[in-house]
Length: 71
Image (cartoon, rainbow, N blue to C red; front, top):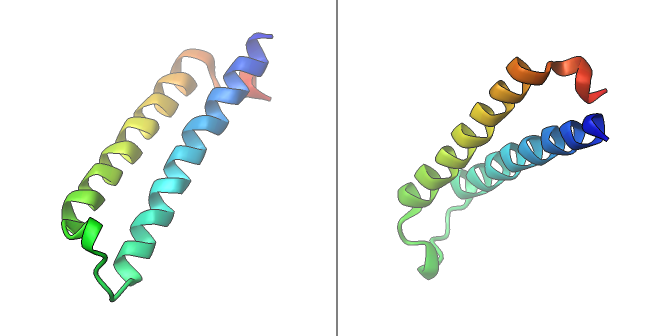
């Protein structure tokens, strides 16, 4: 059960990172500004914060429980 929880957390944090990278990439490529997202830099800043948070949690998970625990 412990390994299943750790595995789920790895996947959750990796998905959060991938989601944020995808959204940032779309914002960087998009040439049309959407009225609801006028503050593009603010939105990207928030997404970078999500990446930072998820990477930090992954780092703690690896340090405390190791990569091999998740397999």
